Amino acid sequence: MAFEMLIVYSFMIVALLLPLGDMSISAIRFISAWQGLRAFTHYVQFNPPSDVTNTTTWITKLPTNVSGFAIQNFKIKCGDQVTGVDCTASNVTTLPVKYFQFSTSITLTPMILRSVLCTSANSNPCTFTLPYSGRFQ
Image (cartoon, rainbow, N blue to C red; front, side):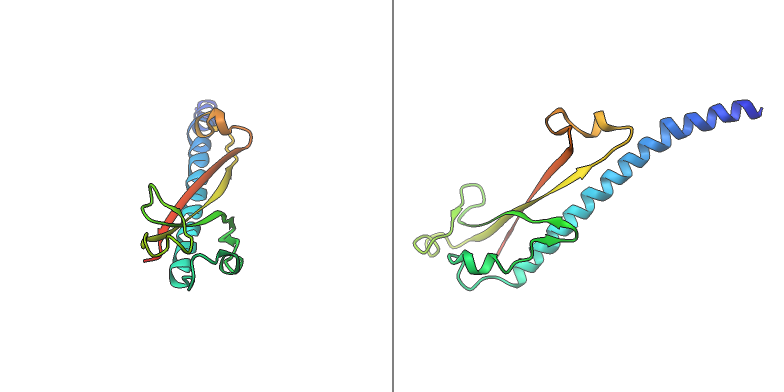
């Protein structure tokens, strides 16, 4: 009886609990990154620039790290989110809808499910880029 329990326990730990732990840790990293992106979006929405065309002074004052995740590729766009262009002094009045785009990256370190969670394009290291955008208005 005791010998069979060792086999059952080792099977449950290796085949069930360790992959479940990999999935849980990965899910927590993704949720934390999305929460950091949302927090940054709220900060930008409540602290909008007075002049969106003058990005050198305003963007340098933004935080570069939110909730432990680095904010990358920050851009201010005018017009539609699909066909939007960078805001300039000439198009800021003709394309009134203004929005911003940015991203962050997360790195996963799965023990068991590396072949499942990490695709071949980003397998070494297992890094994902999460893009995000929000509107000023």
